[in-house]
Image (cartoon, one colour):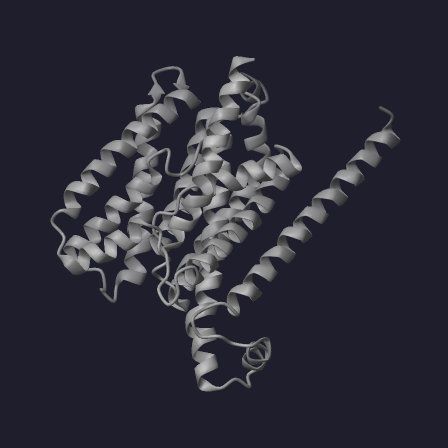
Length: 348
C-alpha cells in the first residue's frame, strides 16, 4: 500500500470509530430517557421536562430526582465499570471467555459483603463508606491470590493456569460464602440474597458519588494502558522482546480489573455476563485494538445494564426483578453461543 492509501485507510477507520461512539452515546441517552418515563408511576414527557427545568411538582421531583435518575446513572456506571473490567481481563488472560466472575473477583467481593452484613448489619449508616472499600479489598485479594497461585517459579504465569486457578478460587469462595449465609437472620438474608441476584440496591445519589471516583480514576488508567495491553495480546515473548515487563504489567492490569469489578458489585450486587458480552460485541464492531475498544466497551456496558434495569422495573409491575436476572437471561444464551463457536474454531 502507498502512503496515501494508508492515510486514507486511517481516516476511514477514525471516521467509523467516531460514528460507532456517537451511535452508542445516542443509544445510551435514548435508553436513559425511556427509563425516566418508565415505571409504576407514569410521567408524561412534559412532566419530565418541567421537572428538569425546575418547575416540577413535589411528586414529580421526588420520583425523578430521588428514585429514577440516581438509579439510571448508577446502572450506567456499573455497566461501564464491569464492561471495562471484562475487557481488561480478556486482554490479560488472552481468553475471550474471561469475565470478572471467572477469576473469583465477584466471589471475593461477595464474601466481604456477607461478612460485613453478618457482623455489622445490612442497614448500617457506615455501609456507604465501608462496603465499596471492603468489596474492593475482597475482589483485589481474590485477584492477587489467583495470580500468585497460578505463577510458576522462574516462568511467571500463563493465561490458562490463571483461568483454571480462578475457577477453583471462585468455587472455594462461593462455598465459604454459602456457609456464612446459613448464619444470617431473616433481614440479613433478604439483603444478601438481593445482592447475590444483582439488585441495584444502592440507588441513591450517595452511592453514585461513592462509585464515581473509582471509575474516574480506573477507566482513564485503563485507557493509558491500552497500548501495553495490545502488545501483551500478541504474546508474552513478543511483548518481552519489545521491552514490556509482562508479569509486572499483567499484575497491574489484573488489579485494575479487580478494583473496577469490586467497586461496581459493592453497589449493584453480583451482575454477571456484562464483562463477557460487551467486550465481544465491541471487538466484532471495531476490532481488537484496546485504544478504541475500551471506551466503546464502556458505553455498551452502560447501555446493556441500563436497558436491563429498565426491563427489570416494568416486567412484573408493581414489583420488579433484580437487574442481574435480566442480564443473565440475555447473557446465558450468548455465553452458550460463544462456547459452541469457540469449540468449532478449535476443531478446525
